[in-house]
Image (tube, rainbow, N blue to C red):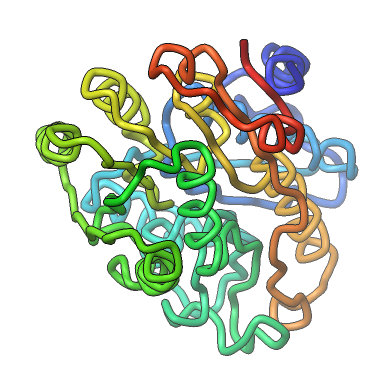
Length: 328
């Protein structure tokens, strides 16, 4: 319910593309935005970001100009958009995802960058440390590696019969090529006496083949790792898990809303509000190396009870009691 209310609140508030309006005296600041998501959910995050900036006193066309590039997950398109944004020499660039942030970093080491939805900024070379970023980049982590163990524990709690668990990821988009989440995933699997399977996928056909193979024998479960590719391919992941009757855990709340069994992850709309706060501070003169990288503090557990019933699962009352939302 809260997600629907949120999207309804902002749904008509900002029109895209943004159109310039008369400038105020004192000049107009410029913000470039590189968004990898180009679906309706990505649009809602973008709108919340712009509305927050407006609350902070920055109105597009009056004292601010925002140039938005929404790219999808194609690497060449992401890099082309990054080059175009940097060529405009904005005051600040807002990015999301590891591929998007890396693309902008390749183009500039001077323009301040604020990221969201990056899991391992130190490992990716974006910052020297979380407390002291040390360069022109700072922002907000979406996941720490240890959460992969939590996902696997939730999978086992939902269905104690799980003895094999596949971790699906795209090595071209996942932090550390996949290793960031796989190490804690495999450690948790050993503790739960589950056989871990690390399965890289790069297309919908790969997703279908992996989940079909997992569903051929009883005791299989699926953990969808967090990367931009998996986020933009929610629909085939959910469809194939349902078709092959595979118990699955997702890192994105939107997956449960679309029919996925269970999701556990940060409050993504809140991350984009926080990103706007950092952009505001940079526009007012703060340096990016003065703003520590922050980890998420708000997480949401969402269960789709309708999907559970379709799979013949009786979910524990303790799990349902902990859920922030139960979709019936």
